[in-house]
Image (cartoon, helix red, strand yellow):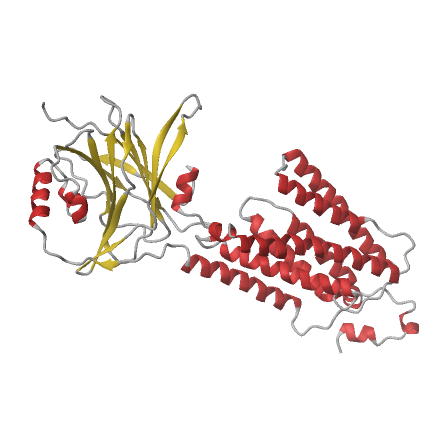
Length: 493
């Protein structure tokens, strides 16, 4: 017979004069104290946000697990505690879905959906608010059963505190002074609830824990495993773009395409770029008057990239990444330029996460003529594969200098994508046209960035495109920059 069973069979006369049983025996006989401790600690963890080391994601999960375990023991005590148990389960389910989605690259789009917002508010804010209300009502019923003459105001204060917290979050009034004040108030409220729990325990209030088939530690382990499984699955299967790689259809080169390629090569168009262009892009350069190009190489993409500019006699065979910019001047009035930005990975390349090409075109009296276009290419065995970019958009934006003293307008283009595994020389290009709108205007310049991953994305997952928009490079992505000042020679009059 165990120590607990032996203690339970003693009569009142046997217990008179005996020493108090050990603390774990007391908690087993009166589980009220342990359940309330779990609930109070869980509420503290679930409502406090610490945005370091992902604690803002870990602590709410741990806190709701404790709350769920606490109300699991109290669910037979009264109807309000039973409602708290169900509401905490709903809130934990919502949180598990949210944490799983944060491991995918689609979470921002999903979070912006009206249906998800309704579900998140219903299963999150409203569920937690209802849980606190039922917790307050359940404690009040327990106080009545214990025949306490003076009721505690801690449960009602906690409900009001959470309501104020929601209002502040809605109006974005979270300055440090207000945040510290709210945390201080919550500490006092939770301490008052702890005193209430201790007072009810000292009155000899009898609570019979609800019977369970699965121990608390086993239930918590299962729920943690479910959350971790969702995070791992999201990271493994939904942290890359689904790309449509298809074999390039071999077609006979027309005489017009061959003639245009010969003209471009004679003007100095880089052959490694020309061979990757579609026939349509080659023919768009028909009748070119001059070609200007610039080539850069970058090594060791896992560290801070080092740039090597190609010059006559310079060998960049050991560079991981090559960037090539080509400017083609076309005949006509007004003057028109056709611009190409090309990249190619030579040997090693990051085949995980997401990539993005970013172009900021400063026109200086020129304007973009049409949306950017292009394609991706790679070699697998003896096949040449191609795929479109996930998207390719361009829009005008106003950029300010570092100190904000001046601004300039640029046409920004973004083209996100992912690279496949097990291929050779993945590469691609973007192209667009600009035409002169101001006579004798300066030639445009382009800030070309290739943002690539240096490691698997941390949690929560972001894309290279999002990092580009934030201009924040202290993370799993790094950019290589290439500023190209177009200065082609006009043909003699």
